[in-house]
Amino acid sequence: MFVTTAEFLPQHRGHRQQVIELITAAQARGQDRLVEMNQQVLGNLDRIIVTLDDDHAPTCPEAVSDAG
Image (cartoon, rainbow, N blue to C red; front, top):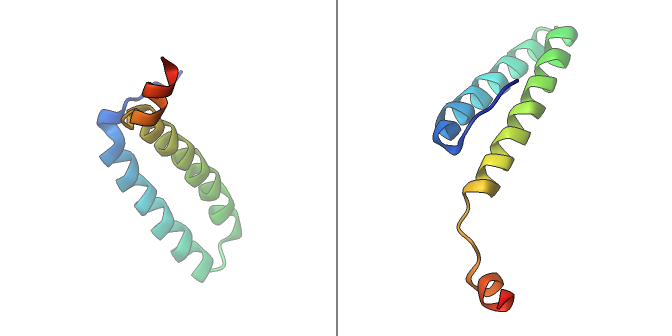
């Protein structure tokens, strides 16, 4: 089981950039399998980052005032 928090967003974003660079280099060398495997990693990182960003985002004031 993998659990992370918004505290690690900078590391996840850095890892995402490294994966993008790896995919780009693998594409240039025609390494299709390496591209495929890292596309999956990229998708996982994107989901983690979006989820943590959403969990960490401040609550919209309009939503709070409409709740009452």
